[in-house]
Length: 279
Length: 299
Image 1: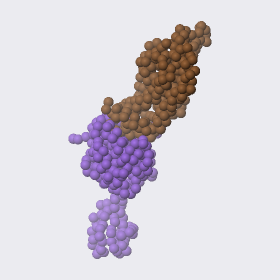
Image 2 (image 1 turned 90 degrees about the vertical axis):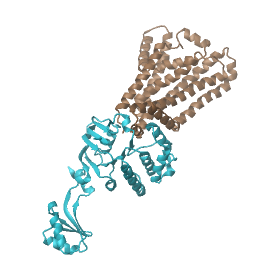
Image 3 (image 1 turned 30 degrees about the vertical axis):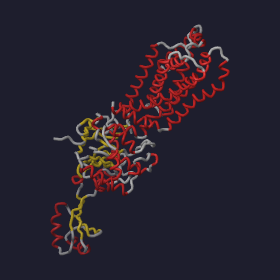
Image 4 (image 1 turned 180 degrees about the vertical axis):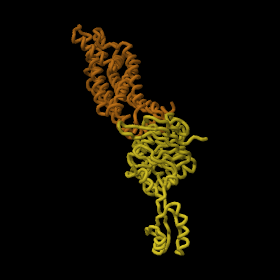
């Protein structure tokens, strides 16, 4: 435990001064700023809307998916770079030559990158929500989920890219993980749309594809839950879409599965790292 | 009976079809300055990495101070100076040493300051690695490796990038550490440096240890005796008359002699009446030994 926390601190110190982190953090901070800028320009128009909650919902539809895309990109780049770079630069071997087990090293470094990813995700998700709240006061649907889900979603994305980057070169890891994340998200949306429409063979096929993508990479429910938690509780848009099955919170078992999946993938990364030659 | 500082038994490692380490066994006693010698690709660095579990051996047991090397606590007093490493550019040696101290559960900035003083690099303590030359990084890395009270040091090409002054300081630090009871495993291609600090070595070729032990037990008689004299011409004539093959060299002559005939040669030289200062049986130099045991033509 002591060595893991020492490696975690070492990792955080290292990451806090790395351009791989500082540039995305600055860009992440700019994003809510951009939302503020846009909202300050359209504030008068927003006032004309019948319901502030619907106005907030509309803005969230436009801004949160983009925030999620930026966060995904950052997680994939950091996750695919950190460990492979540590190994190729000889630093992983240097640390493991100390009284540090490989598990402690991996746990410390992964926690460090997870902490940094959480900060960036938090800036993007909560910073954007706060920016919207500053202009359009609304009551979020579920504050607890809104805080927890982006972190769980970050963990799932980081778990995926960590394990893939231990098997494949960096660029291939980024491409594969972004493709999986994008596909999972896309199929999540498609599944909701087709679920709200009358059934048919295409709809059935789409649902099957969605379930396959869900079991392979179950991050989408976490993102949906985050969005529904962040979203306004009394938005008529949301209520209307929920009534046809769209914009509903995913069932609890999907969240539990996503958590178990993330833990299992981190364990797989640990098993891979334990067998690797660090030279 | 105390366990050796390092006990290696049946250690082997393959990379695909390449046998990087053939099953090898060796014991390195406490307080030894032990050299790993061999050509490029002989397996010296792989040996160090396998001992420290950086590469996963295919077979074998490694005990560091009697503790299985797979147990991280076995590396509590171990220091490792890799041949190539890129420290995080924005960190300073002091900051990195603090992190290492956290991991080891001991260590103070003062001990690093002391070692940097020995290497004349105190000004580097708070300089980021990114703002150092290759030699300066190496000095800092050596200072970090020797800081505190290491029990066993693995130094992989420690002289890389060092100027002559720093090399001399390094030799002194190695001798000092050994005198305090530390065991040093040194991998170096600089035989002069090895000869200056080591008395024991393992010679490696194609992933196998072909010979190991004290240099004195490994060197062979060259078949020549060296006679230092101010009259090499007269001495040569005398030795030729006595039936020896003679080679004139700087400061004297060398005469061919079988090992058990050396006392007779000494008596003959002493009775020749030609002034001389010494007669010695010539043994192999470390370079000769290296070429015989580990060189390209040694098979």
